[in-house]
Amino acid sequence: MSSSTVNGIDNVVVLVIAFTSGAWSFGASVMTGPVATIGKMLCGRWYVDAVDRAMSIGTYADSSLNLGGGGISAGIVALFAITLVCVGLNVTVLKRGAVSNRS
Image (cartoon, rainbow, N blue to C red):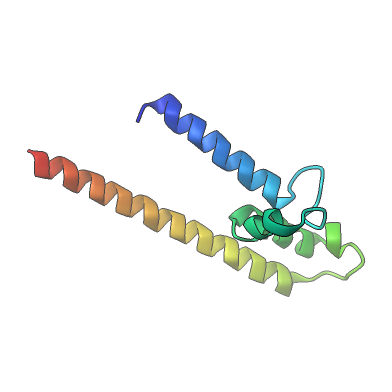
């Protein structure tokens, strides 16, 4: 794939994550049905939730400082990061294997 194709795919994926996470002008409480479900399966929602809980803003504005809940959400974000690193390493190994098999 060309560099511009990869950049286009990246932009679309990042925009979907940002829209479904509630990171911009509307919160996750506004989303209903399948959109909210997709948002919960992506890392952006958990990041926004961790920040909201830790800073007592957004849907947690009336609550006191909640580092425990924010820590759980941050842990989920860390698991997403570890998973993406593992997927990237596997793709690299498979790609190198395919190149070495052709030689």
